[in-house]
Length: 306
Image 1 (cartoon, rainbow, N blue to C red):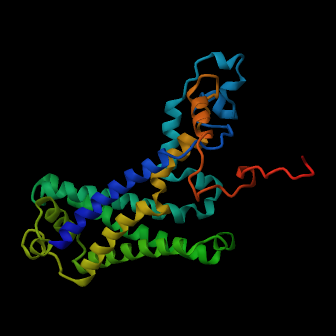
Image 2 (image 1 turned 120 degrees about the vertical axis):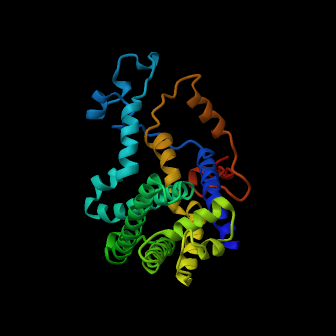
Image 3 (image 1 turned 135 degrees about the vertical axis):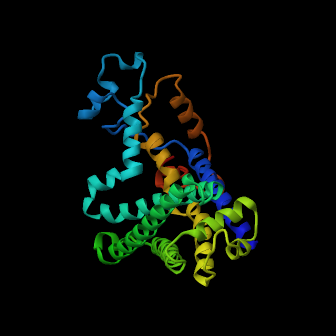
């Protein structure tokens, strides 16, 4: 029963901490505006050559419209295919994309398991779901394993990455690798099926002890130490991800909308002006002053200067 409660706790904390992280990003002060182009918010014609609304005559008197369709397409390209990494460092793209695609498959695997827990394995729909669960689970385990090993090797051998790789980044990769490897081992030891995943979600949705579900005839599971190790590691990584730099799945929205694409005009009486005035008057908290020289109090004038 402790494992069932732990699984619920991990799931709740993942979503709760992700929302807390989003709130943190949303409360940050306005970034240093630079108006760098091209951005997909502009019309298709201007976006093609890096133009902006400021090219138009008396642009400050006109309504500024966003190209929402192009914005969604650009976001999907980055979220689903990591487009910017492919454009700028395509020789390393496949390694990183393997890991990310494996994580997407793991998310799909989790959702499908909950669907399967309600649909069962006896019905025609349940059989289809089980096939999809198997495909998603194998893809997740294999791609996450290959992706993490590839990124570990890259950060240990490629000088341009090795120089700024931190211990935490290596820990993150080995943590994900441990989750993927124990998941594949559990799959193999369980007769190459994911009945253990069904047992977990069945125990969670019925709030039953996991050991009782595993011992039953509905979802027979090989009771191994690897199984419980995998469940614990999977739950811990779900809690850990929103707390570390891997929470960039939350930060990307704010990076694009509040930094890269934020080209709202700073006009008299606008929200941008009001935000700038408000935030420029906020004094830093005691002991949290910026170290930049231009942010320090002006030195007292010397006698000679007087």
